[in-house]
Image (cartoon, rainbow, N blue to C red; front, side):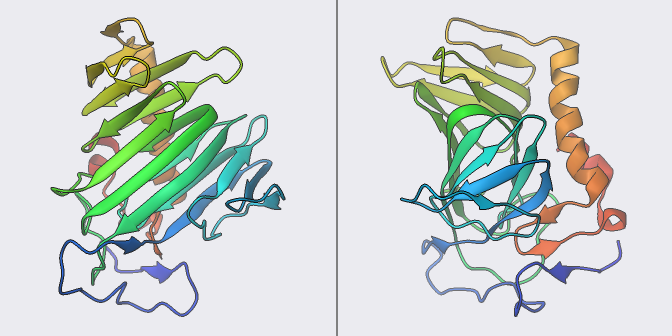
Length: 241
């Protein structure tokens, strides 16, 4: 693949970050809006002022992203994982911490240990999580429970008006822990959970999740603090995990 990596953040060169001596040390990592479609905004932590969100914007920890009808925001983390915030959603990027590392992002997993936490107040998030290293976490929370993964393609939807939610897993696996009784559900690829039972997804539901993730490939995925051009992406890896 051609090496045409370009910096998303001004002043950053080929070396992403320096390697640290303590492997367990985590620091706030880069998060950005890789794609913005339609009307979207964000609010800084502790504020109510909405700021227009555009592609390439660095997203600080604790920021709340809001999308309007027909609007989408693809959030990209320095780990290589992506989260597509779907229309009519309100989602907090609670935390992204990562070990410092040097060099380009690997094709099949994250470059260093990370901790990602996303909170859905309303709406849906479709995530494509890079294969995580031992000690890493990627958690999507809602007011009714939390979904934790190791490396997977899945969606979490929460309706703030009704309190209903659904977790759908296209590939990989998700552990969902309810806030009320603490019950843990193991949701494997091709299954979904709506608060009652774990049940198989339809072929159309699985294709729908994969199609959303493949949109990232079509536009040239922006991963962390670098842009990977469309001709650099191995589509077999991006679409199939």
